[in-house]
Every structure is written in structure tokens, then in C-alpha cells.
View 1: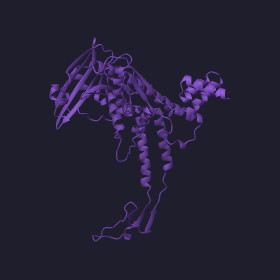
View 2: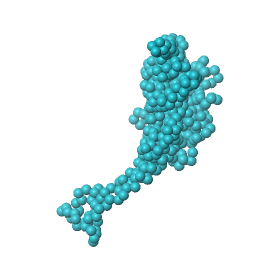
View 3: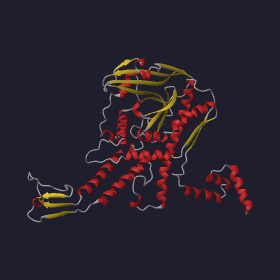
View 4: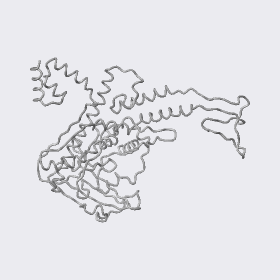
Length: 451
């Protein structure tokens, strides 16, 4: 937590938390430390951390970390809604939304979490994804589920700034959606309140909507399954790399040392000033300023500069930092680091891969839960606007873990279970070949008859 306090938060257009709290008279549970941390994670993800300078070259490790995790989480992922005419309507919207599943996971991993919210674009229903900078959490239930929030929408035209605040909340037996619009000529001020009808894009939006019969909000919060070490009392999610920000800074600095070692150790030829021809003004003409250097010397006319480059020690130190980052992010060794620099036993490699596998599985569970909640609110949204006939639906998920799981090890374990008569032969075929029970038994019977 002290690490975040070492960097100043970037100036925002206005103090969003304080402004929203004042407009709706709310007690916002999000702490300043979480706001500062989010600002830092955003900068790191965009590869513009506060330690970037002419001397420090940034590797964009945060983006690489979340990109790799999102790939592992969503590779060959399949999900669908089925069961009725309504289910088909929901699935049509859902499948278009899932086309960006890797992007959603990557953003959530980088920023701690994002919100999925159904909305209208023209006369079409889409599922919007909202980053943490554009929503303010207001309340959570006992399980940590986000139940009420304020969403921030901005439109800029010339030098005029329009802001819409959309407040979702429960009041007694009703679900309330309250919209308020503001106009300002400066980024640093929310400005004066105006009617929604004054902005073309917001003319069709109701100032107040009251819905009865809802048990869950009309949005779903997808957050990372990491412990919140920035604010242990906050139910908000934290970035996958929240615990290794300092190590990422160390890696950038160490990499910059490596670059400097090569740059400062470049071959050079020092020549006496009398060795260079001169222009009409008497200035020396140096053919290659990177290779040739001029000096005044009473000794050698030529002097070669070829220092020994100390790259090995720097690379080992750099690799050690990368391994600590991998461990802190729940990644297997070799994802970022160079595993050829150290001999590892088979058991160490297996344990390392299992760590990455466990991290991916945890994120997949969180993603599946968020998508299940999303389908609940999308179903309610469709009912609210009577977009499809009533009907039941079911949602299915399939996360193919063949790339991240050690299939050979798992096969060996199942073979031991088979030999110990704990697992039946047809069950092994069902797992290995993906056959159903009837096909697996029939194949085994055919094999026995042919012997």
C-alpha cells in the first residue's frame, strides 16, 4: 500500500467520487487508496507508469501479463443460451457480446474488474462493458455482490462538456434508475444541471424509471478473484499485477541498465583532432559520430575503445525479477522469464504449471459467475421492455483447458486409477476421446469381440 502512496494520482477532470457523492447525497464506500491504485494500474497497463523517463525504458510487462492470462482463460471457450424462443433471443445478443470475451478478461485483469450492462443503441439491445473509471460503486450485499452503482457517460462537443450520471439502486420493493445531466465549459467542473432533452443522444432516456419485481441489479460486476491488498475492507477487485507493481518497476529499471550497458560499451575509435579533415570554416568533419571520437593527445594518434560488456550478471538479475513477478501474478515460470538459465526438476516444473493452471481456473470461475449474473439481468431487461415472449432458458459453459493442463500427467493418473479398479474402462474412454457413455461401452464391447 505504501508503494501507491509514492506516486501522485494523475489530475482528473473533476473529483468524480466527491462530485457523485454530492449530487446524490451518497456515502461512497470506495477509498482514496483504491482510486490512487486504479490510476496507477491504468497508467501501467498503457505503458506510461510514473517511473518512465529518458533513463528508464518500460517493457510493458503489465499488458503482457494480462494478455497472456486472458488468452489462457478464453482459449476455445464456448458458452450458449438455449431452451426456448426467449432463450434464442437472449443467445443472439449474448453471442455477439462473447466475440469480445478476451478483451473483457484482459481489461478486468488489468484494472481489477469491469461491469457488463445491457442497454439500447438505437433500437438494438447490446451488452456494454464499463471500465472502473466510468462507474462509482455505492453498495454491496453480504456476499460482496455489487448491488447499486452510478455510471458516468460523457459527450464532448467543441468546448462544451456534457456528463450524464445514471444511478441504479433498490428502494424498498422497487428498482430505481435515475438519470441526471450536466453541462460545463471546463473539464475541471461538472457544471450546471440541465434537462436530458438538451442532448440529442439522451433525449429518449427517462429521468426516473421505477421497476418492481427485480431481485438483482440490471448489471453484472466481473472482478478478479484476487485478495484486495490495497484496501482489505473493500469488496472491489484489484489488478492481477497489484502485488508486483514495485517488482515491475525494478524490472524496467534493470532492463534499462542492460540497454545502457550495451550502449555505453559500443566500440569506438578515438582519433587525434589532427587526423580529421576540416570544412571551409575550420570545423572537423567526423564521418560517423557514433564510431569516431575526437581528442587531443600527445601520444597515440589512434586509440581503440572496446570495453568488456557485463551483460551476464545484469541478465541474471533481470531474470530473477521476472520470476518473482510470475510468482506474484500466479503465472508459471517461463511465461516471462528465461527458464533455460536455471535447471529445474520435473516436480518443480509441474508445480509451476499447476500454479498457472489454478490462476486461470479461478478467473474462469469468476468469469462464468459474472456471465451467469449478466444473463439474469439481460433476461430482466428483455422482460422490462417486452422484447421477447416469456420462456425458460439455460446457459452452458465449456472451458477447454487442454493447453494449460498437463494432459500426460492426468492420463497417467487415470491409468493408475483404472489399474486399481477405481475407474472403469469406458469412463477412461469418455474422458480421453470425448465419447458419450453408450459409444464408449459399445466400442469396448466391439474390441473384446474382435480379440
